[in-house]
Image (cartoon, rainbow, N blue to C red; front, side, top):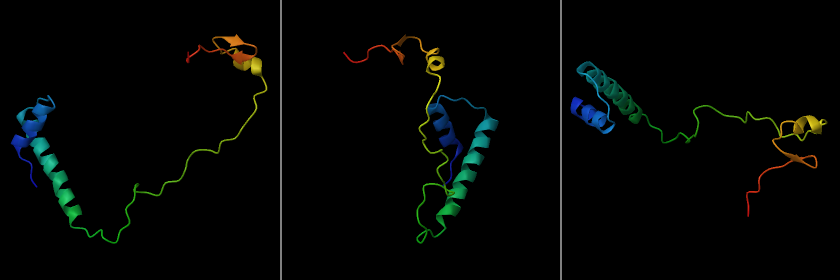
Length: 95
């Protein structure tokens, strides 16, 4: 599939973009290069290849949840905008 200048101009108009002649020709060339690469990918037989969601194997990068105590409750409450009976006081959200 090839893209011509008319199609690039149409998409630019839809996106409310303005390009000069040199830019339009550059985009035509770049988009056609991308489409040629997709054509090459279509030639590859992928019938025996298992689908993947990532190109590389991923592992969980998060740490395990560990319950930790906080010894200085008063220091923690100094950041509270409002405090009552040693706890954060927040506005009521359910009537």
